[in-house]
Image (cartoon, rainbow, N blue to C red; front, side):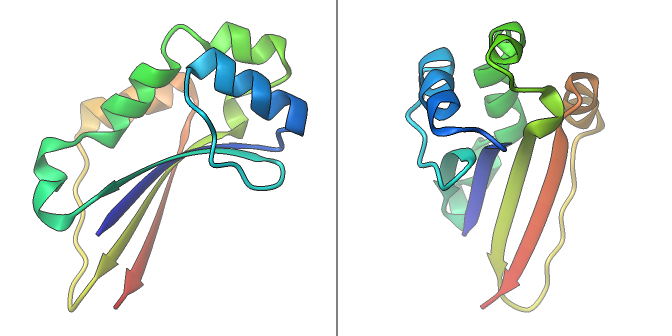
Amino acid sequence: MYYYEIRILNASKNQIEQIDEILGIKSISTINTWNHEVIIEDGDRSQYSFIDDFLSILAGKYDQLERIGIDRDSITFWMTYVYEHQCNMEFDPVKLAGMGREGITLCISCWEK
């Protein structure tokens, strides 16, 4: 099972509401963090590119986010993977370069069943 998230850290309650409006997605926020999550079953993973999806959600909206006090370095993409036996990952360099150009950090967390 794969869990993919966009997290925007250090966001106030007011900022979380504004981010919801700017991005057009209702947060599943926790205290001081705006959060959007996508859950993918193991067999469906090859059809989903979380980096492309998340970059497209943010595309053209960085200026609006900055106007409400959200810097790019507070935006992180998370991948959490629950696995058995072995955990291997590979990332497309072009997609990673796209994240790098936007100053977004990639976080990976693996949990053994």
